[in-house]
Amino acid sequence: MSADIHPTAIIEPGAVIGEGVKIGPYAFIGSNVTLGNNCRIHHRATITGKTTMGQENEVHPGAVIGGTPQDLKFAGEAAELIIGDRNNFRENVTVNIGTAGGGNQTIIGNDCLFMAYVHIAHDCILKDRVVVANSAQIAGHVHIGEGAIISGLVGIHHFATVGRLSFIGGASGVTRDVPPFLLFDGDPARPRSVNVVGLKRNGITPEAIAALKKAYRTLYRSDLSRSQAIEKIEDCPTAGLPEIQELLESFRQSEAGRHGRALEATRSDTNGGMYKNEKTKKPS
Image 1 (tube, rainbow, N blue to C red):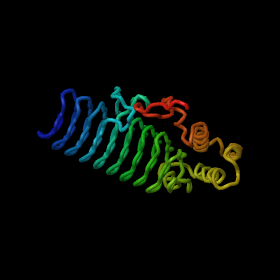
Image 2: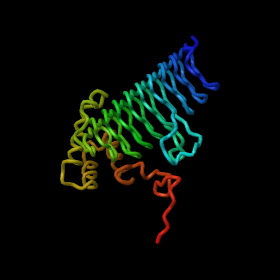
Image 3: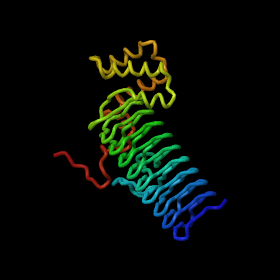
Image 4: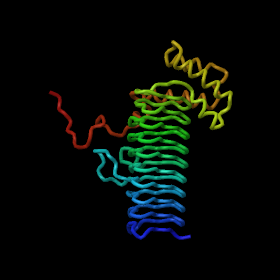
């Protein structure tokens, strides 16, 4: 089955359009775009940049997918956006391509939902089944684990990591890493509990949930230091559970980073994050 393209849509030469793709009125598809089979691009949606999109994705009106990074360091280098299958980009969502400082790639997995007005900046990596609610804003170089849920109006600081199956409450300001399996809320976002509902929905065993609850109390509700709390959890009989090991590893990585963000340790800019047009001040 060939593609169904409205006559008012603009498809630049070089674009690759898969079988069964539907493209609505006044949509724009750039010359470096590849659309997998059975994607649906609604009217007035824009897909631009070097963007590769898998199968059965849906892009709603006003969305701009593959736009230039909003980063003053960006110098037009070759960069791309890679999107998996069955993702849903609702109205006015914006997703930027990568930059040289982040490996030149923004990557989105499979089966994600991005509600209206969500922004995903350059060099972000989002795993499968991530849900981001209305008007959440995700800064550059953020990593979001599988099955995480980001509520509406959340702002996530650049280089932050949001762990697998975590939940962030509405209007929260995330300035530090969010460990896997936990529920964070507030501005700044703070740990509130284990994400029990999300864990049950995703088939995490009762034994693992009970162990995570105990580990949470040790980490956040005891008088122990972080290192003491981790040592105590490692001495528990449940320390070998994969979920406990994943939780502890996220803490170790955050401690090895800066400002509570593990990915700060991976920054490639050697001038303290200065923009390319800023001049280094000479010491007096």
